[in-house]
Length: 226
Image (tube, one colour):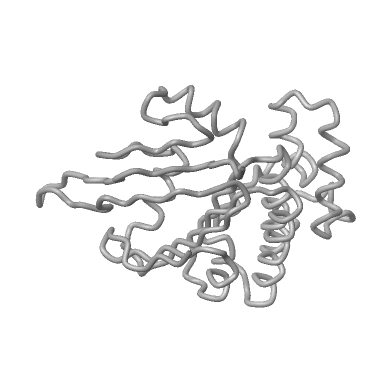
């Protein structure tokens, strides 16, 4: 039986501004099994990144519930949510978010060291070789191209063998060729590790690689694809 890794029930997000209430996300529900891949697409302002943040426990909903790895995020405090993410979740962002004072190897080692892994250095080196950066392990982010930095970020995201990977516009800052290479690596790692992928993207080609698609308009789901 396939394990359910993520469930959202009637998820809503409302913010209050000087102009009144703004409903960013409205009554959205979904379920994902282990190894699933889901693309979240839509125009700017449709609620994509808000949804990703809620699913990952980086933000709290105004209504509804998220269960991540069997845990209701609403029942956990901020520290408990952070521990749950550290144990089960990987992240890849458009802006890479590498630590500038650490080498590529040290950036990938970091989550492994936080998990107390004795093999942190060896596993980080193996992952960097896996993404084609075996000769760049001692380089710092400023010495790497955008595509190389995103490959370091991918290696770091998969380092601790997360059950689910959230990626927010992972190819947004990359040229078409480099973006295609990073996409291929992401799905290869997904297949090898059985990690569930949840991607926010404007790239319809990337979205088409996912088994499922969720299209948002004005915070509402308008197109599911199973």
